[in-house]
Image (cartoon, rainbow, N blue to C red):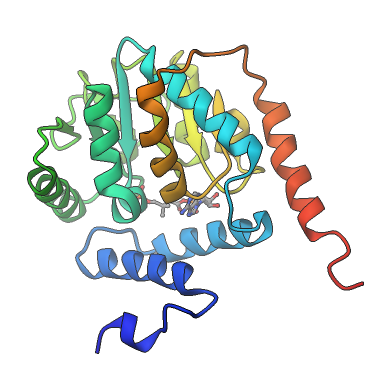
Length: 249
Ligand code: PTJ
């Protein structure tokens, strides 16, 4: 019996359950870190408080992220396990629109996971009829300041990029990329995370909603503004507190 048959589409949490299913299936294929579902659950909790919608400030941040990617000299999309599980097809579409590579850059790096993730993206590339450059399999450079496998990257990809999109990035690596002088564009439902606070532009929104919005915005070729990231993060927090006000009156 399929999950669609077990969970009726009219169930109020249907979307959320189907997204969890994607994470669970990717986990079963060996693509994800053991803690992937926990990370996803933390995101869900924030999404619940945001009202499971793209707020006005998130849409403004998405437009700013698109503007910076469209105007970049060497843009790169850095993808981890969760990002590929939830929106692999959309990220390949975005990379193709921008004419840039994607680079798999995972926190818990093992050869088995890298193989599963590269294989999955190659399959999606073929399915979509795209020829996006998939980097990360043969790291030949290091992000300064990061020890171990999580600092591994590719010289022609992340290392040389000027603008980098990092969905669900860990705080250390976000800081290290900022220290390298890059514009670091973060997607994270938690406006209080270190990545959210250290990023150049942060989109506080659910990853798969963001990618859909990006695909729509790229053809408009928006221009970068004088972005105030703290103001945008504060707007997200204000939205959460307003959304939670007077719930039980
Ligand atoms: O694939 P790997 O090895 O790189 O590992 C990936 C995870 C996500 C397991 C790893 O990076 C990790 O442990 O992440 P954290 O530190 O738990 O951070 C995940 C952040 O992403 C949290 O702040 C969540 O709120 C946020 N998040 C989770 N799911 C989503 C999300 N943000 C946007 N959209 C989501 N679907």
